[in-house]
Length: 449
Picture 1 (cartoon, one colour):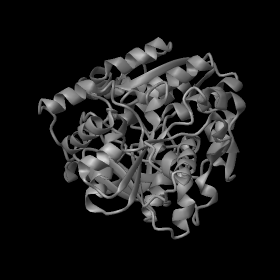
Picture 2 (cartoon, rainbow, N blue to C red):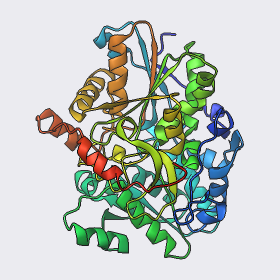
Picture 3 (spheres, rainbow, N blue to C red):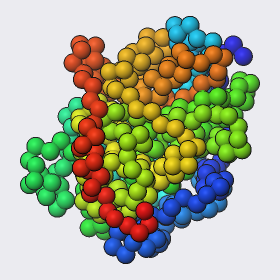
């Protein structure tokens, strides 16, 4: 095919989400209760989530039906296009074929809206009136704000303080859709006040913002918590990305040799690659690459251990690659990748060597992003640019391979970061091994590993 874009019609929008656990040849370790260290039960999650999402978190079913109101909301931007990066190929003088799934076309500019709409709908159905959440770069906060507006819910967002100041226009989006937004750590919660008492100038982390959002949900009636990554039901909702991409590649007559996505908590990566992994598990030679920043090298330098998902130890313990729940990453411009842990599903795949991981410095990532913007016309989000960087590296090294990556969002609200890069003001930061070891000492001891 000579097309630049391989579209799908609305009639081809997936009707079900795909649950990878049904096809895995091993069991993914269950989360455990932080006090009893026993496997988590459904009732343990009821203060935080509606029943349907809890059922999805624990389900072993291979396919989960997408409700009609969620599919109707999806039609605002889905199916998203799969694009051939022909101009990038020409610039690189590569014989490889490079494709990208363009999730930047969603109303909020990123993949996050896929699960936000689903979570808001299921909460609304159960009579919930308000959702609380955290956000790093602001993409998730914007997505949940949009979704709450769609289904008439109130929303309170705790935004990591460094991103709160770096990315003011994402706050604007959240305000447009009716949400309250507060810099985290804040004085609104006990966990936030405790953090600020210890460090009044703390710039925050996703773990801290999660603590605040969870505390807020637990202590207010008719309020639930919503998470934009990490948990099984979140990655489940994101599989619309990979299922569409499979159809589009088949239409283009292509079989992928490389699948690439950036990883913070794991939602865009899992949603993109999971529908392909049944083929990978059948010994098909597809290399699956997860990319991350050297400043927050969870999959490349973390430990595969049970750890808390938040800083204040309010969440269940999850078996995952972790840098320690007390880890506070530097204020790099890929705010959505500044998380100490990773999805238990993605972590298990990494542990079993089904996927591989690569970490990049931020200046190299921005260089690849600018190259992509100059050739393909889309400015990638700094997070997505990690996938661009890996795709460019592969295309320069390999010959006649089909490379497919997920462009999880655009960077139109990250232009101040690009300005700093173009002025030479961005600095590389590889988190010191000594500090990682110090943070990892806080990982709780457990007979479960």
